[in-house]
Structure formats: structure tokens, C-alpha cells
Image 1 (tube, one colour):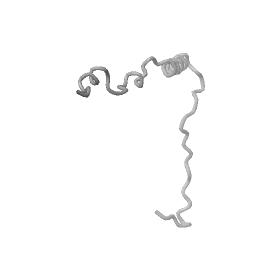
Image 2 (image 1 turned 180 degrees about the vertical axis):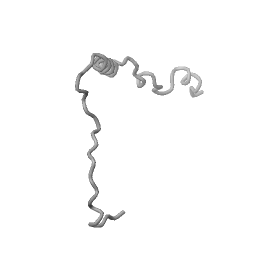
Image 3 (image 1 turned 30 degrees about the vertical axis):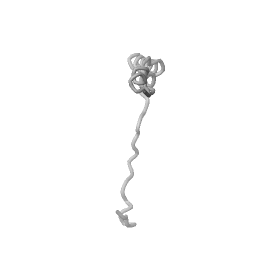
Image 4 (image 1 turned 90 degrees about the vertical axis):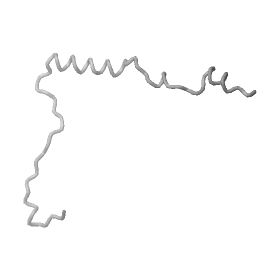
Length: 65
């Protein structure tokens, strides 16, 4: 939509996306630390469990005769 010079009198509103709280409560700090530790030391690594190709059973069944 095109705006004309007459429509430019619209007031702009600033929106704050995130602002830190005035006081850091222990609950907020503990939650942030827990999330950080979980992100850094997550023991689940799905890439270690993916199949990497045919295994010995498949090779045994598909041997050339």
C-alpha cells in the first residue's frame, strides 16, 4: 500500500522485544542456569544412533553366490 504525504502524520510506537527484569529473582537465575546446563551437557546425541549402512546380517543375506 502506498502512503501519501498527508498520511505521514501517523505516530510511531516503539516495541521492546525483551527487557531484563528490574531485579533478578533466584527463580529466574536458577531457571536460566538449569537451561544453560541442559543445553551444554545434553547426553542425547541422535547422530550417534543413526544407521550408517548395511550391517553384517544384510551382507550375509546378500552375498554373491
